[in-house]
Length: 175
Image 1 (cartoon, one colour):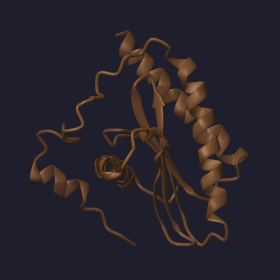
Image 2: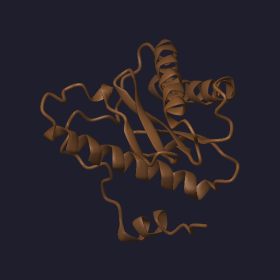
Image 3: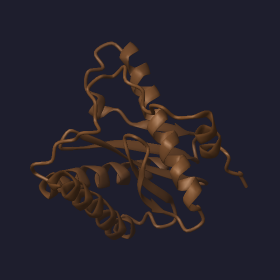
Image 4: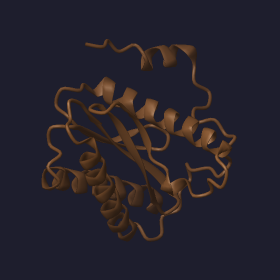
């Protein structure tokens, strides 16, 4: 029971922290999200995105991160995955995601932006938020062990998922 309570406290911390700091870092106009490594969304800041798209973004980010992490195994001396960030962008629009590690659990903090003159500034703010949040989150659950994280990199992100469930995940309509 303590594990569930600690996870709930940590999830609540993430929601509270991001709700307070998005404005402080002048990031209100962007889509900012946080999800667990399995793709379950924990936080979503954007009133124009519906709940179904929140779940889809979380699942896609979890899968993209796992794929990028597997590709990074081809990089010589790439032992420090904490240093990696995921970015898919042009000079003015894109998606940027950072890993956050708390008590052996991995989370992803991301932003979607467009029509920006200085995306480097946005990415820098996101790194500051991630560092601050990761440092403070470690105090929230000192004794939590993660039962969902696996050190086996060969394990699939989703197990026993049906074709029908996959169709539901990717059945959203783009505007």
